[in-house]
Image (cartoon, rainbow, N blue to C red):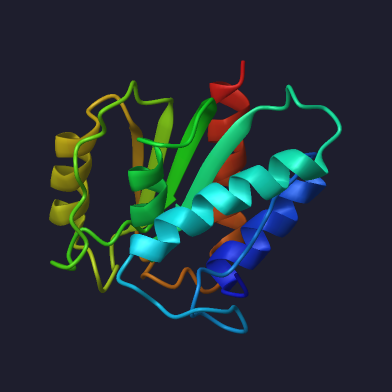
Length: 171
């Protein structure tokens, strides 16, 4: 949750009027538990969604799931179980890492935005385009030139792209 590609876009989203919740999956940073190859992370996202819903007074606020890298993989998987998702954002989905298998969604897919850099070390441009075409042909995808997996120095650009997508998705 302290990664620049998560922390800074959340800051810009807050400034644009969106409430955000950042958290670490189990076994990351100071969180309890241990990493379980994604099994526990799926439970973590459900717990985070419920915690976010409990904290807001306006229960009709739209729910947007977003994740970066491993979190993008978990975000995609969560679309099968989290209810009432208005939109999904996947930043730098790791299609190039064989351990992360993106399974087809069994529910109706909400408006989805996927963004990656042309220099991503864990997902080539071809893997990104092919992966998104297999998952969701209707997704809005963007490949940003001269950006690697870490998004250093491009956080504002990333935030602007996400905000633009969310603004459009919620119209």
